[in-house]
Every structure is written in C-alpha cells, then in structure tokens.
Image 1 (cartoon, rainbow, N blue to C red):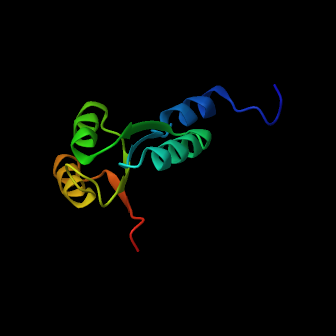
Image 2: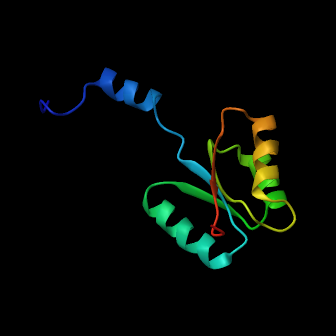
Amino acid sequence: MNQFEPTRDQRDDLQAVEVDRRLLLVDDEDGLRTVLGISLGDAGYEVISASDGRQALDLFRTHTPPIVLTDIKMPVMDGVELLKQIKHLSPDTEVIMLTGHG
C-alpha cells in the first residue's frame, strides 16, 4: 500500500462526512440564473433552479437542499418571504440573499 493512500477505515470516515452539495438557486432573470448555475455547477454544486419564490418553495419541499441562494426582488413571491417560509420549514438551511438593486 502507498503511504499516501488512505486506509480502509480512513476511507469509511471520509464517506461518513460527505458534504451535501445541493443548492437551490432562485432568480427571475434567466441570464443571471444560467451564468450562476454554470459557475456553481463548475464549483461542484448540484444546482436546482427556480425563477420565482413560489416555484422555489415547491422545489425546496421536494429536494430540501442545505443552501438556498435567492434574489430579493422577484415577482410572485419575493426573496424575503421565501426566506421566512424556508426558515419555518427548515431552520438549519443556509439562505443567502442577493440583489442587483443597490
């Protein structure tokens, strides 16, 4: 065995702490959602996308990703309301708010 190769126990430990790389990306601007989705995918995230808060909430209930990246100003349901709903369903979910409106 190579001295740098993990032992069986070390491999088991590494598998036990595998990180959930799912992320819900929410933005009503198609172009921004596409570019961010590609960049996050390239960084190793499994990106689930939604174009508004209501669609995002439905996807969140289905997939329950540990991270949500959302725009604040959107039609149908804005990011602040989405934040409230997600924190009600899953207080430990990390929600990152974005805005292009200074």
